[in-house]
Length: 281
Image 1 (cartoon, one colour):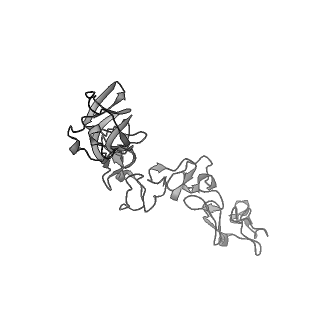
Image 2 (cartoon, one colour; image 1 turned 30 degrees about the vertical axis):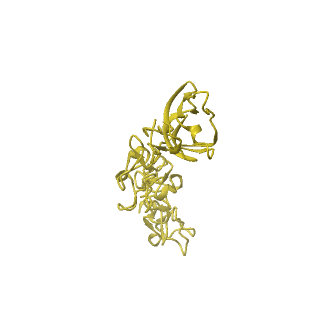
Image 3 (tube, helix red, strand yellow; image 1 turned 60 degrees about the horizontal axis):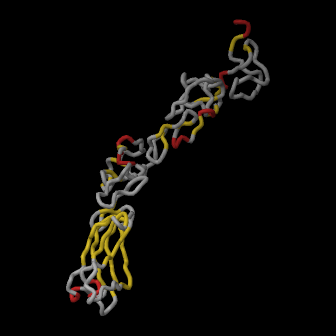
């Protein structure tokens, strides 16, 4: 079934009388149609090319000669008929209005969508744009203020709600409304929780910072996420011990995990890192 917009008829030149009083009807079947146009009775008012409006819906388009007296020419002689219908997504008397339905097309007459609107549109006819900078998404049901953009002044695309400045740490998707999953954290959720070195293997993973529960790291590691190796002469949990505070016997390396002296300890100092008194003295 189509919503008819306009019709163009190419009549046989010199025979306008053959269309006089003829009717055009549209309907769902040949026996169930409504007349939408009747040609003038005076042939002088009928041109060779006729453009007319025939607003109606149907599956059948019928041009009918009403029948005349036997003495008159009752032939119906037409060269071509062009029927223009409303395209999907348009409605109104002249198909001049547009609807933006999500998974279907709107009613060609009322413009009403049977379901949701496409992202960026709202209203019964899905013909009203989302308020710029205020809402976005399907039926404009998402608020721009609920996003987690890096910049508070970030633009808000009416369809996707995307942040032109990117997402704050701990958030993802184009509109920055989805938290990182339990295995990731940080900017664009690009950091892996499994790469941390928390003192507790059961530590949770904050989706923003990735911080360890107790703030304590395994020996040889430091930082809020326990992903930085000990440097600059430090070792142990959270890198709190200094290699210079050891009492090694001679020059010794300083492993970042336990700080153990590879050359042994001076007298009165005990292993593993030669920082404690021997025999409690």
